[in-house]
Length: 221
Length: 221
Ligand SMILES: N[C@@H](CCC(=O)N[C@@H](CS)C(=O)NCC(=O)O)C(=O)O
Ligand SMILES: N[C@@H](CCC(=O)N[C@@H](CS)C(=O)NCC(=O)O)C(=O)O
Image 1 (tube, protein in one colour):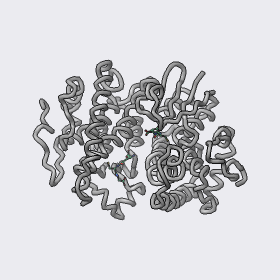
Image 2 (cartoon, chains in turn purple, red):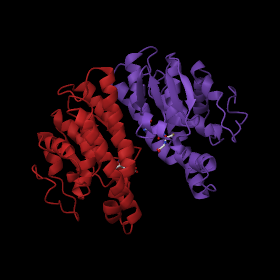
Image 3 (cartoon, protein in one colour):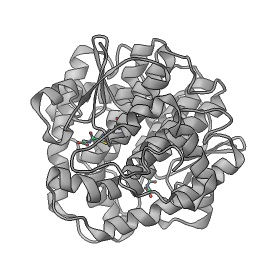
Image 4 (cartoon, chains in turn red, brown):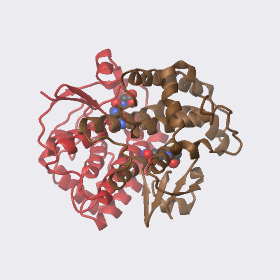
C-alpha cells in the first residue's frame, strides 16, 4: 500500500495529498512529528522533511518533485497544461506560494501561533505575527488580481498552482488567519476548491490542542 | 535580445545562466542589486527576486520554472532524462540544493560573510558562520556518497541537479568556503563541471570589494 508520511498542517504535505486525491491514488496517511527527527524518519528521508511518499517500493521526498512525477505517471486528470508557456506559469505560481508566500506568511504565522506551542518553543513573537498578518494582505490582493483575469490562478484550468495556494491558505485558515472578506473573488475561488472531493480529507484534519474553528470545514463559510 | 537580470553570487541566477549557456541561448547579463528593491525591478518581478529572464517579450521569474521551460522549449542538449523515475531524482536533488542546502549552508555563509558587508548590515555572526561551516561537511559527504554510485549527481548523465549543486558550491567557493580536500570524488566532479564552456562566464565573475581567490577560476585547483 502507498503511504504518505505527513503532518496535517504542512502545506507541502497538503499539496501532495490534494494531487494524490485528485488523481484517485490511494494512500495511507501516517502522521509524522517531523520535529522529533527520529532515526526511522531520517532513514526515510535524509533531508529530514515531510512529505515523504512511499510509492510502491520507493521512498520519495520533495513535494514538487513528487507532484511532477505523479503528473507524468498518472496524467489524468491533468493538473498541468500541455503548452510550455502555460506550464511555466503553473510552476512559477506554485513556487511563488511554496517559496515567497511560505517565507512571508505561512512560516511566520504557523511558527508563532502553532509550532511554538506544539514543539515547546515559548510564546508567540508578536512582531512576527504582525509581519505575517500584514504580508498575507498583499498576497490576497495579488491572488485577487490574477483571478480577475483568469478562472483559476494560473489560467483557464485548475492546476497544481491552485493546490499549492490552497494548501498554504487552508493551513492558515485552520488557525483563523485568513480574512476571507478581503476579496469576494478569492473567497469564491477557495469555495470552489474546498468543495472538491479531493479536499475532504483536509477538511477533516484535527490537530490535538488546536480545535478546528467552525468556518474551517464549512463549505458556505 | 534576451536579457537576464541577475546578481553574480546568486545560486539561482547561476543555475539559470548555466542552463542558458549549455543550451547556447544568448543572453545579455544585467546586474541587479536586488536588495535595493527599485520600482523598475519590482515591475519586472512582483516577487522582488532575481533571477528574472526577459525572454522575447516575456518576463520570467522563479529559477526552477524557467529551467523547466527552457528544457521543454530547447530540449538539446538535454538536462533532464526521459524516464519519470530519473526525472524525479533530478528534481529531488535540484530541490535539495535550492531548499535544504541553501537554508543550511548558502544563506548562512553568504549572508554573514558577503551580504552583510555589501548591504551594510553589520558584522558577521560567528555562530551562523560556524553552523554553515559544519553543515557543508554533511552535504559534501552526501554528494560523495551519491557520486560513489553514479557518474553525475542524479544518474549516469549530467543534469540540472549538477548545475543546481555547482551553482551553490561555486558561490561558496568564491568566498573560499568549500573544503575541496574533503572528498576527491566531489572535487573531480566539480573539476569536470568547471571545465565546461558553460561555466566560463561564472569563473569570470567579479564582485567589487570581494576579489576572486586564486583557486576560484583555476581548472586544476
Ligand atoms: N522543499 C520541501 C519542503 C518541505 C518542508 O519544509 N517541510 C517542513 C514541514 S512544512 C519540514 O518537514 N520541516 C522540517 C525541517 O525543515 O527540518 C518540499 O517541498 O517538500
Ligand atoms: N525561488 C526563487 C529564489 C530566488 C532567490 O531567493 N533569489 C535571491 C537572491 S539569491 C533574492 O532575490 N532574494 C531577494 C528576496 O528574497 O527578497 C528562485 O528559484 O528563483
